[in-house]
Length: 123
Image 1 (cartoon, rainbow, N blue to C red):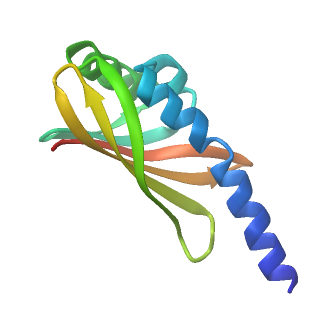
Image 2 (cartoon, one colour; image 1 turned 60 degrees about the vertical axis):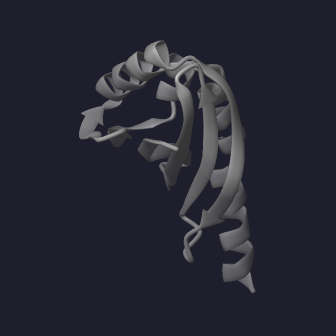
Image 3 (cartoon, rainbow, N blue to C red; image 1 turned 135 degrees about the vertical axis):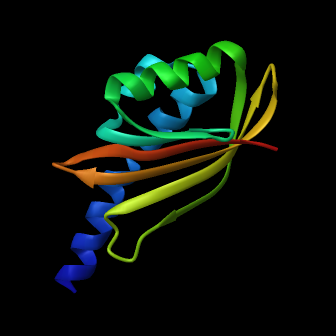
């Protein structure tokens, strides 16, 4: 029973920042989004994928948002790992350059929810 309660509490803590993360994506605010990047994060934009530090990831997303101004984000699916230490969100990002499928993978680290991977694929 205690393990179940702990898993629920951890899952709630991980999910607490997801609305802020999706809001930053929806509004095209790469700087706000960057505060949720881990020290090392995989960013894949179309067919360009790389592992960046926080500043590099923020810059890559900022460039993407400059070319594709976000107009809105709608969440399609959300899930969690069995251990409840990570979650993911899949959604559609509507931009000036078309619609992109967004994948956000976050993990709890040191009591914080941090983005491990962020992907934008053309719909």
